[in-house]
Structure formats: structure tokens, C-alpha cells
Image (cartoon, rainbow, N blue to C red):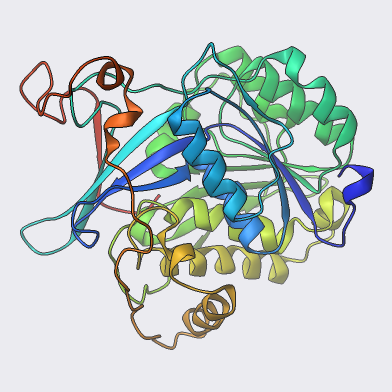
Length: 372
């Protein structure tokens, strides 16, 4: 951490997708909720909520979406020292729509097109290598978290690994195979969903991290560890019961943040001394946070409706196998503008209620019904 900001709180430096999440669900009566999101943005903000000091390294635009993202991060006291706003790019935007299926079970769909005109929304843009000099010189971290592979993220991971940080890699995809291989080689913890198994299996070689985690949706997760001589076999932890299920979109991010929070506070040296019992407790804590998070709309919706003290009480009940009460949901805690501002096309011309194909959801959508 910067010398003038040293505290007793552990610190995390993160790099990857920081985006504007536009969450549209039945409980918010289809009024968009605008929150900082993306895997990196969510894990970073959750860790700050859990008592860490978080420094995201991100490249956003100088636009309305960036304004909403930065305002939300500031609300949770996330440090924005190294968030760069670059007029040459646009801030990434992700639309999440939540609907119930015919059985009343919630499903969420991620869309990367504007709900007003159908145009493609801005996507992730990596930081430039020359932007890393200052944060790498100034910041100390117990953990470095990243979810996107780029020359800058691999260089940052290599630097923090050499400084004694735990490098936690949660890949969203392979991208450049050469860079991806380097990312795997430097990572101490690798976490991925079962949907990524085939991609991982097709790699020319598989490094052996200290901890490898594969999430299995509502079936839980499995993990294996490495000591000085060998990797252990896979061990499975079943999922924990959620008090209620309204949206599973953020379960994986809460799980990652919980694992980091429990196992990463003493950096790599401390992590290497973690016992098998402590490791399992850290993984179960992450699973309990994931179960709790499913009771709210949006990846981090629970943060806006629950105090940290109330969260920890609920998590302890989940871990103990005692069914906690389903969370109460006050009316929307935040009045938001419509989503039309997020799209350059909508800013340049009057909005259309349908896209080029006649559908407000035309373009690339991804449907998810279970936590990852």
C-alpha cells in the first residue's frame, strides 16, 4: 500500500473487467439498477465490503458509464488511485435481465447490446503497459487478483508474485494462448467454472498451482492442492443451501472474494502454511457467501440491502446448516436513469425501441440459470 495509507487491513490489487452493470429484474419492476460490476469490479468491491483495502487497476472511458462506476466504487470506499479514464475508449457495459421461467425459477441473461437500439455495447479494454509503472512502484498487496489476460495483467501478476503476494487467477477465457500459459504459470490459485474444463484440458501443458478450484454450479465445487512434491487428488464440497434464490449471477464472485478474504490476508507465506482444515473452512466460507448472494437481484445486490454485521450472522447460520430467514427486500434503494445513456448510438440519435433486427435484445446474449 502507499506509505501514507498503511493500515492493518489486508490489501488486494485487482485487474480485469470493471464494467457498468445494468441490472433489470422483476423485483425492481424493470427499473434498471446501475452498479459497478464485471468480475474484477465485483470481487474488488466485495473485498472492500469485507474489510480489505482494494486497488483496482482499470482503464475506463470519460463517459456517463464511468461516472456511475466510479461513484459506486467510491460509495464502498474502493481506492480509485489507479483507475484511468481515457477519452479514447468507452467504459464496458453489461446488461443483465432477470426473469422467472414457467416454474417460477429465476434465470438471468447477460446481453452485450443496447436494450434501446440494439447496437453493440463497449467491451473490455486492457490497461497499457506504460500505465503500470506507478502502481507497481507504490502499492504492496497481500493478493493480486485478475480475470483477463493481457501483457499488462501478466506483467502485474509476475511483479506481485515476486513481491510475496498471492496471485489469484480466475480466467474468463483463453484469448492469447501464449499469454494465457504465462498467466497459469505465475498463478498460485486458479479458479474456473465447469464450463471451462474443456478449454483447460486442451492446453498444451497444465501448470500445478498451489490451489486449483473448479466450481460446479448448484452441485458445489471441487479442488486440489499442491505441496512441495505433488498435487493431491480432487476433493468435492457440496453446495450450501441458499436462504432464497432470486439471482445467481454474482455467486461466483462472492465465492472468490470469500476465499481470498479467509485465506489471503497474510500473503503467500501465510497461504503456504494454511492447514487442510483451514483451507476447507475458507472454501466453505466462500460457498456460504455465494449462497447468501443468491437471495438478491444483481451480482452485488445484497450489499445495498444488508449490513456487514447482518451478513456475517446469516453466513454463520448457513455454515451451521441452520436455515436462515429469507432476506427482506425493501423497495428499490436507488433511483436510476434508464439504460439508454450507455450506448453511443443512443447518445447520437433518438432512441429506437427495437434494434436492427427488431428486437431490443438482438446481438450477443448469454443465458445462465445456475451459479458459477
